[in-house]
Structure formats: structure tokens, C-alpha cells
Image (cartoon, rainbow, N blue to C red):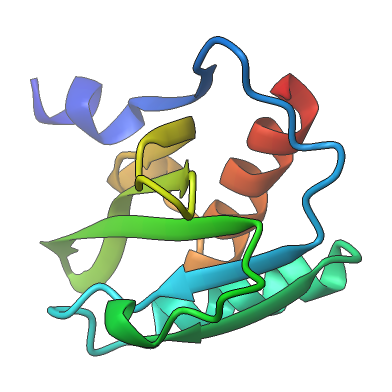
Amino acid sequence: LIMIVGCVNRQSATIFPGTNLSGAKNFYVVKFPPDKRGINRLIADQLIFMGHRATTGPEDTAPKNADVIVTYKDKWMWDITMYMIELTVTFRNPENKSPLVVGNSYHGSLTRKSPKEMIKEVLKNIFTKS
């Protein structure tokens, strides 16, 4: 059973009806309060690398010109070393915080990826799907 769980990996992106990200240029990544690893900064950096404008910080300091509010939740596991087992990223409407797109990446211990790789995977799936 441990071998089966260790080999599991999955990735997905779900778009909510009516979502169109083609005009989105300014992204604001809300820092998940329990995050002590700077995942918010890594997400913002990847968005910038992909050609978007992105900033990050606490939820209450989101800029007025944000086209998309980005939230995330990271889950970590111990297996000889700590590693990110799951990452969920949600693009939200800045006006009412409703979800536009949700992307997820899950990698067990034998298929683990670095946080940067998981972020890249999730964002690629989100933009490909939308």
C-alpha cells in the first residue's frame, strides 16, 4: 500500500463557466498565512516568467488594478525529508472573490517534484485549460 501511495500523481484544472482569462494582465497572489516557505513569491515569480504582471502580499493589500486574485494552499509531507505533496491554486474574481479557475497538483513521495516544478505544472494547466 505504501508503494502505491508513493507512486500517485495527478494534476487537474477546472474552469468555472463564463471564465475568460485572455484579458487578465495583473495578478495579485495572496500569501497563505501559514506559509513559511515563500510559496506566494514563487507563484508570483512564475506568473512573471510566463509574461504576466504579478505582485504578492496579504489579502487586505490587494491592488485595485488586479484582474485576478490568486490564492493557494500547499500541503507538505515527511518522507526522509519534507516535500510538497499537494498544491491547489485558485484564480478568483477580484470583485467578489468567486473562483474562476482551480488548478491542483499532487505528487506522492516517489514522484515528488520541487515546489517550483509543481507551481509551473499547476499554472501551465490553468492557462492551457482556460
